[in-house]
Length: 466
Image (cartoon, rainbow, N blue to C red):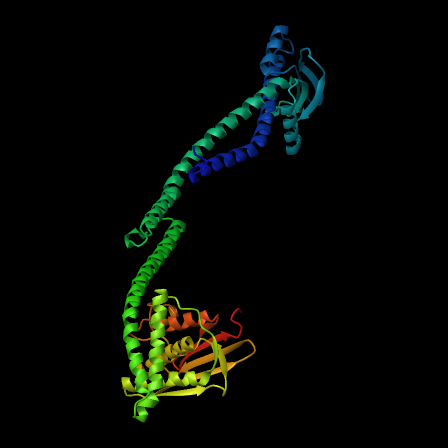
């Protein structure tokens, strides 16, 4: 039996505990056996004494010796009618060392005498006093050798231990078979599924199907299946993101060339004779420059990571104005038949230290999500962009009067491709915004959402190392 296995240890512990239980009952069992032995000797001695009483107290010496030998005693004394009479006798091989009175012997006193007798191998002569059976007198008293009694006690203890050992082994085998069927086999099934899943985690067929009858093992199988489904979904999403990253890098490469040409042409618009064109040219150049920079960043990293922010001090109000103007133009182009009003609450002259382009993208994504949520209701709404500062941080607030975020968006907030805030959305806007804010050692949090609208808060620490 392998004790390094669950079934082996289970069987070993079963044997140990059963033997411990048997040892606990061994002492009282041997004590009772000792009392039964003494009572049997008293009974035999009383029966032997009847032979002498029946012959009018006259018996041959050899018959008397045979009666005493069969009874296993040296002397027999009866007390009848308050008269103490030596009925049978033979020479004692030694002095009487102790007296045992079975009429009033306490349990713990008997246990102590039993243990003392087992520890002492030297034979002794003892006197035993008890009550005669069938009212054969007031008491009966015998003298006997302790050696046969001690041998009988040891023999009884050994037989009891052997029986206990056999019972323990049988019990251990039965429990081992039960453990193999009820515990070990389901655990091995779970291990087999884990091994198969580890070899092919992207194969949904290797996900375990809970089938155990035991509640605990079935709960483990259910938890394992949930974990495997989560890991498989994550691996598939990673593969999708990797493929998307490669596709975006290829598109960005060609798009950068197209935008570079557009940037050159936009520069020439600044010298146009049309005043409206000259006014729009700087904004067009700025938008194309941001697009070119974004393409270059994507090519530099080729994955869903943003470049470290290039920090600079700038006034926040003009940046917010650019964001609002771009969203107003987008709203006019969408022409969904409802008016979206923009409101700002930014202290005059508020200066913030951040990456201007990245912060523009953060506010643009949040504002665009808010605008599209309002437009989806086909009812007028308001978007408010506010900002402020304290000793430790700058904060920016983007709130709207839209319908609030759907449940799926709340469950996967800031996770790309796991549910956008509108039908058909990818969820990339919030994920990009949260990633850019984390790059500033800040955080983007959802303050509230419901039927009265949604509000996000951007926290940017003054100390980037904080």
